[in-house]
Structure formats: C-alpha cells, structure tokens
Image (tube, rainbow over all chains, first blue to last red; front, side):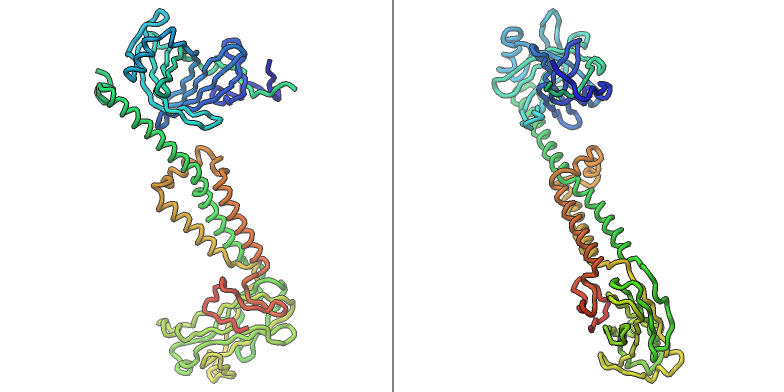
Length: 175
Length: 290
C-alpha cells in the first residue's frame, strides 16, 4: 500500500521520531500515522500521540519521556454501550468512580491529569482531564478523557516496549 | 483517604477549581515557553554578536606597516616618512618635550603639526592643546602625545613639521626653548592601518543596550540561564523569524561598518578626498584644521 522513501534503514527511527505521514509496523501490521497530537500535563510531563491507521482500523500510539519512557497503544471504547455508568459519572459528578469492572477485570483509578491536547498541525489547544485506570497486573489500562461539557471518550490499551514498533519510515506516495 | 481527598477536598467545586488552576498554570507555562523560544535566540545570538563585533573591532585597527617607530628628530627641521600603503589610514603620533618644570614653556599652550606631501605642499594641519595636561599632571613628565589619523592617498615621502604654540593657532616658529638641546627634539611614530576602526563602538553600545533590556526584563521572557537552556535544548530557536531578522540587521550593520572602514569613510583625507573627519570620529582632543 505504501512506499517508503530512499529505502532507508528503519534503525534510524524510534517511536519518539514518528511524525505525521510516517509508516510504522506494529503487531505485524503496517500503519500510517495520520494525525499527531502533543500533550502537556505541566512541568516536564509532556507526551505525543499518533493516530495510526491501517486502512480499516484506528489505534493510538502514545509516547511520554518523563519521568521515564512510557509507550502505549490503545483503542477507543464505545462508552455509550460498554461503559455507560462511567460516562454518566463524568457528566454528572465531573469525575468517574474509583474502580469498575470491565472485560472480566477490575480497573482501579491510578491517576488524574488535567492537561492540554495540542494538534501538531493546527496548534489548536484543547483542555482535557484524563483519568487512568489500571488492571490488577498494571499491564493494561483504560483512560477516560473529558474535553468539554458533553464530550468524554475512553480508550483501552497496554504498555509496550520501543522495539515493538518497528520499520518506522517516512512515507512518500507512489507515483 | 487518597491524595485528592487530602489535598483538594471532596466537593465537586473544589476539584474543578483545582483542575482549572492546573490548566491555567500549564497555559501560563506554555505562554512563557513561547516567549522564551521567540526571544532566547536573540539573547544568546546578541552575546555572540557582541563578541564578534569586539573581535572585528580589535582586528580592524591592526597595523599593516610601521613607517616610523619613535623616530627622534629635531623639531626645527621636521622629519620625513614614506607612504608605501596609499589610501590607507595612517596614524601619526607626535610626542613633544614638555616639562612643567621649565618656566619658558609656561605659555606654550599647544602644538601644531603640519604635514607636507611628496610634492612639498601642505596637505593637512593638526593642533592639540597641551596646557591643561600640564596643569592636571603632577608627574613633571611629558604631555600626552598628539595622535592624528588621516588617509594618505599618494605614495611618496611626506614631511612632518611641528611648532610649539604660545597661543592657539599663533605659530611660534623658532621657539626660543627649542634652542635648548633637551627641548629641541620630538618623537614621531607613523603607522599605516589595514582599515579604519570607526563605528564599531556604536554597534557595541546598541548590542549592550539590548543585553541590558533582556537582563532587566528577565521576568518577562526568562532569566539568562533559562534563555541559554532553551537554546541548548533546541538550537533551531535561533532560526525563528524574529531572531533571524535581528541577526540579519546586525550582520548588515557589521558589513556596512567594515566596508566603510575599508574605504576609510569618516577619516580626514586630502586632495580629491579633502574632508574633515565626520562626527563619529573620536578626535582625541586633536583639532583637524585641514
């Protein structure tokens, strides 16, 4: 589907180098970074997120470097159907409950972070509040993100290592 | 009880107030960061330009050739030197014997220096008042020298003739004191320069003023260490439009200054280029008569 330029070596790029339009390989599938966002949580707590698209599905790749490197991949959850109670909590109480059951696991809140989400292209800033819940093994998480009065989304994901995202290459369209 | 309950409280209002204040802090940090990114390049680059301007200023006045070096000569006869670098700024330094202990010199208020070209015609005259140096000096020593700078446009042998004066512009040829052996000799140094060295001081002043503004307004765009860190973290801040504009302006001024100095604009000249020094020229209390 995509053609990489210069036939360059992927070893030159790591997750933090990804930019909009880059092609990456994750979970044996090629993805294109179609959007890039920056997150500012205050102080040195900053992160980047790319919307990855394989022609059919969208996933979200997050990279944070402070206080230690953190890389995660997540997918959007339909809150209306899968987590309606949590959604109501956020709307009516301005915060979710501290734990809930989902997907056969109990998820416990570990963090609340107000911050800014900035579109890297347009530089548009959106105020968000993010709540993170971990599963008992702390290998997976659910993030609930509120941006505005009536907008709340949830994402389920897992923490990954840098090497799991490979063959990172800038993309050029085939002539 | 969790961190939230301990620090923020239970109420919905207090939690939202906390979230709002965190967001405001983040926004304020970002605004400050944007200002730093915009101006850090100027701050650091300005310091680099101060050093560059100082270096260029230092080297601009380098001596190309020394025509005479502390040449002692009988003032009544004058002294000659040969110009081998025409069109260049020549610095003529005349030291005259001037002892405060000698009463006969009490009324010799200054020295006139006439410069004659290869054709024997006078090309320029300089005058320096000496009297106040004697009054202010308690070391009984010689007065400060007369230092004149002029562009000499023709090759050949030039002659310098100094005259002690007992009143401004009243030539006292054959001063009686010159008959005394110890008072009859002057000392002349002539050096040709690679280029002039005018205007740099004004640019340095401007650059220092910008530096002072940055230091005074540190609370607005960050202190020097923050500025330095910003540039160190991302050297590309130097290529932001505002720093580039500023550096372009300084570079243009530097090029202009070096070009003017190469041409000797601002220095006294003669012949087809007869003119007095312009007001940028620091005359060092020497009167350029023409």
